[in-house]
Structure formats: structure tokens, C-alpha cells
Length: 366
Image 1 (cartoon, one colour):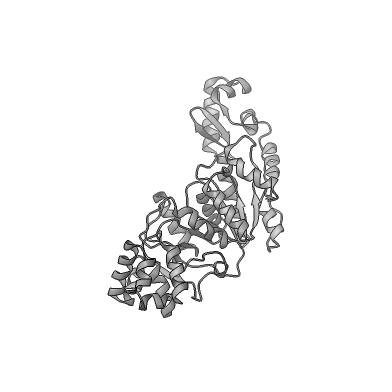
Image 2: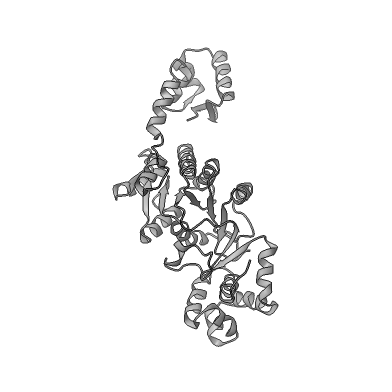
């Protein structure tokens, strides 16, 4: 990949250990460009602005020469885009504190494609996970790029849904591009890249997934999106910081309603009270945003009606339709004996119509 000198210098600055990115931004502005920082690197101005670790890391690369910057990217199979580069995402240019450069693997989506962030709790519920995956799938199939953070829980469900829908998805990391966090999402990361999507990070390639990185990266998740879809989260959570950035950036907010006594419903219900748009299916987003392909999808209520009709005549499925049940509760409700009930539950599990959810409890697969 070809880089202009100024773009290459911006990328070089982002190789500094994390934690000094604000200082680097200020230094570039103060000195009139990243190239000026390179040229004046041994001056007092640069030494005062950067902490010792950052300065030493940048000096090592500087001594090795400009070609070493590209070599380091090639070693990890990545590329980078500087803020003044042609490939830099347009949506990031005008936000507060845009990243000087992004490290990337895969293919950055076209700037003119509609994009939606699907976000929520790491400790998700089955309901939240299913809805996130379905909404992301339906949006992706309509040509919407799905943005999320590759974290456990809702983020993972969103990326999987986008892949199921045959669309593109972008994962914004809270660690360096050289590794995948959480490690169990390595295969998901590979699939995102292989499907024409992208994994990006503003942190140095070897940066660890430090706790303070994630609120920083959240401004990028919201900035890359036209709409932000909240599935479930507590009021005080990292997800709330993404919503805060989205509001500051003037993004449209959608929230999925949930059980009023569920912890993950705290933030969605609060936002709905404050004027966020209610979300029941991908069609709500497509219609509100004026995006093409927005034929009305089935809502959660339509799906429940369809499922209720499908379960008519089966006492077990009817019992599980309204809520999860234990084996003992099903014995009492259905009137079946234990061996007959056990055999029937096994068949329904094999057919994929119910699932065991812990102990001897069951739920219907929606």
C-alpha cells in the first residue's frame, strides 16, 4: 500500500504505547503536522509532550527508518490509514478527537454505505443475544454495514448476524490489531475479514486490551455509524459511553424494549423514556432512516404469534411458549409420566425446537 509522507508519519506516531494519544494529537497540532514531529523529534517540544516509553518506542522506529513502519505492518498482515489519507473513513474526520491513524485488517467499507452500530452488554441474555443476531442479520441483508466491538455477548451476536445476512461488518477493537480479544473470537475475526469486512484499531498493534481502552474506542463505534442500536445494558456500563458519544455526534438512537425488571433493560428503557426510537425489528430502523430494502420484517410480536400457532396441539411446547419450565413443572402441566416426558423432550431437543438452559429446565427455541 502506498502512503504519503504525512500519512506515514501519522501512522508512526500511533505506534507509541497507548495512553499518550491525546498528547500525540496535541503535538501534531502544535507543530503543524506529523512530519514536523518526525523532523523535530529530538527537540524539547517533543520530549516534553511524550512520556518516556512513548518517546523511546518512536525513537526506535525512527532510527530504523521510514521503511520499518511499513515492514511492521506487513509482519502482522495489516495496513494503516492516516487521517489525511484517501481511505480514511469520512465519518471520523469531523468528530471530537479523530484518531490520527487506524490499523486495519480486511476491507474498509465504502463511505457511502449505510451503517448501524449494534451494541449491548457483555453479560447478555438469551433474549438479547437472539434479537441482536436477528436484527443485525436483517439489516445486513438489506445492505447495511454492521458496526460493533467484537466483545463477548451482544457484540459477538451482532457480528454473527451480519455474517448470516451475507453483509459486511466492522469490528472496532479495544486492543492492538496484532491480536484478537477475546481469544475465543479469533475464528469470528477471520470470518469477518474473509467476508469482505474489516477489523480496526487506533491503538498500537501490540497494545493489550486494557480497561480504559474500551471507552476510548467507543467513540469510533458510534462515529462510524448513522444509527446506534442498543439491545441491552445497565445504566452504568461501557455501553452507556457509546450512547453518550452517539448523542454528542448527533446519531439516531434506537432501543430494544425488554422486561422491566431485567438488569439489561435499565438503559434501553431509560433511553426510550427520553426519546429514543423504539426498536422491534430491523424494519423499524430501515423505515426511520429511509434506507432502501426496508420492507417490513417480522416483529418480535409477529414471531410470537407465529410460534404460538406452530405449537398448538403439543402440550410441552405450549407450556414452554410463555416461559421456561423445569422438568418437574412440565410433569405437572402436561400430565405425562416421567419416562414419556423425558423421551419427548429428547426428541424436541434433537429437532431443535427446545433447548436445555441449565439443570433440568427448558425453553422453546424462538
